[in-house]
Length: 460
Image 1: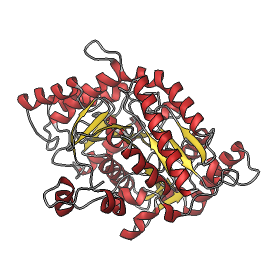
Image 2: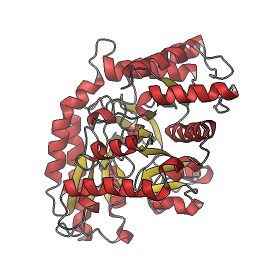
Image 3: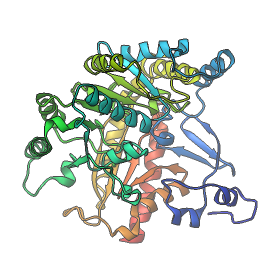
Image 4: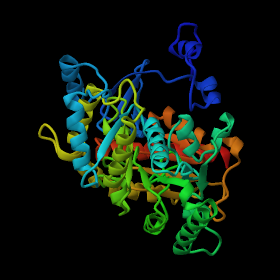
């Protein structure tokens, strides 16, 4: 519980911090958890309390909170060349090497990379690239962006417009031209008596109808997460991308994979598009790109978009866009180390993606076990990302009254038990670090189950 003494960490946080994406009633009752350091997948607060963070920070601290190799890579680059940009024909050697490495490990045979400081900025940049391209190719009306309800693409004005979450209404968003299609969540969005194959076909028909209604020449791209992350870990229905990708290709509409969460191993595949066997025209990357050790995002362009954008830029001499810290040398050095640690193996240790694949069957089995609870309507996920959806009535999928904030209560109870998890809608989300061990996974599910039992006993 919160400490209200004048000089407490909780009081100091309240006095000078403006909270984002934070449940204020919980803060008022419980106070801010102020952290000092981490140990593997655990974090420790100012009072010495230790928490197993089952959300890897914010999906991204996959190498844990004290990975020696990651920290050393940053320190070495700070000593060597602590900061620069990638504008005006100048960039660091680390930036050049990272671009080479990203194309090497991407699904693309060739391509180009543009750096940002976050996934939000990378999505924003992608849209500006597409708008730039449309005007350059004589189609300035090609500006509309198709995404899906419940999809999350960031918080800048453009990225928030792409995000299909109702909370953006408080900003007067989305901007014009951002169109949100149905969320491909068969369990929740499927009609009575509709098979999953029929649902997927309906999603394809909806896409065709929207393209016909809006006009293919007005649509700049379709942007989709392979697995919706902040929407509540929602995998697509069976065959979804196999259905929508050919439709987009037929109409000449680029398919952009937002892999901010799914990229670099989260699903058990290198990339989420590989997990669902489709080839995008561009990939948006962040989070695992640096394993959370540096703020960085990237737009990874496939060969066709690379060639078209290069030709367009040559017509006007420059692409007038960039950030002070684009391609930051320390960030690039950290990203190179993260790719090594996650995908290749480092300092005698096996690649962390191997541990993702090893732990996934146990993770899935534990999720399925908890799904048997009478008030868990669905367990869903892919690789080491999953969600448990709380329901009042399992047979009818009826959710709890929104005023109960059931997922927030579960998350707060987990915190009381020394476990950090994330409430999203009426679901509780887990996305553990890739360094997690089997005993730590047992601890995670034991604490989560205890919290579920306690909350459901109180509210049912």
